[in-house]
Image (tube, rainbow, N blue to C red):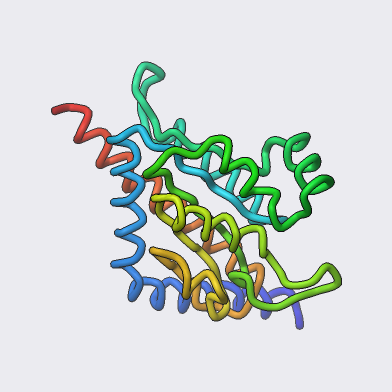
Length: 205
């Protein structure tokens, strides 16, 4: 496909996805409300993903901590991207297996009322050479549900297992990895700046 045709298709598809995502505004709003409640109560928010989605998790956490506030003396959202601790993740994978790489860390940090947010393109559907995809994310979300927390799944394609099991699920309506990953960034920026307004208003009271 010529470059210009590819560009046009990518941007046209992006426009269609935006229109379809608006139908999930209730779920997106619920994510905002859950994170705002975590901010008010000082609860932990753990953000996880694999591959590119691990990078998305890191970026989102940076925004939750810093971008949701204006000044360094203010309190942002208490958030951690678990994949950022490379020695911990590699040791957990080596000793316990990849499926439990995140649950081991959660067990250490966890307090009741914490939130786990998982980014995954396929939501745990499908498999490759290492077996079923993203089972570490599924186990971490289930850990949250089993231990008095909230499980939020942000996925794409058909939403996979995450869509069925998450307390709140947002599914990017696209069967394209680059488009799903692109819209995960759109979504977390939307959520971040909506939170920023709510936190600023609450801080003035």
